[in-house]
Length: 107
Image 1 (cartoon, rainbow, N blue to C red):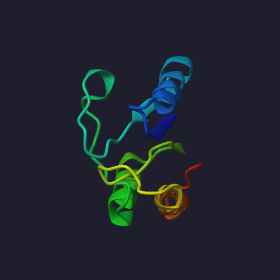
Image 2 (image 1 turned 90 degrees about the vertical axis):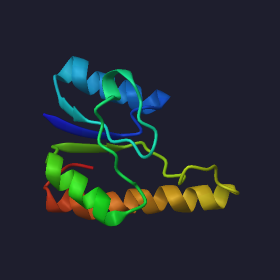
Image 3 (image 1 turned 45 degrees about the vertical axis):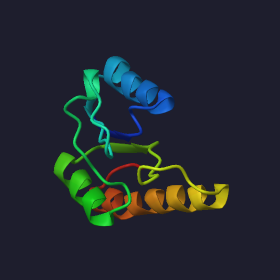
Image 4 (image 1 turned 180 degrees about the vertical axis):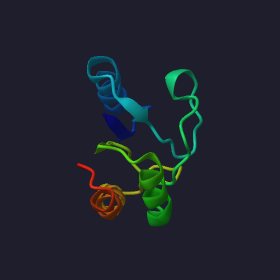
């Protein structure tokens, strides 16, 4: 199984990635937005979750069986309001829909 997990440097996403890897033996792609982490995610590809073409290219390149989107595209800063944060998060989730469908991937 190939699992594409966004948000894997956060608490929830890192646990999801760990379960996929350890319990299910999945090959993981754990893209990061800007911060290049150390440890198990040091080789993670940089993908701007706010850019539809970058998302599409990353999905098609990795060809996952499943996408777990737990990333939050803040653009490097915190949202000025809850409504703005929701719009950004919903927009990012919407951007995963077409690449997932095009790659016959579960989202």
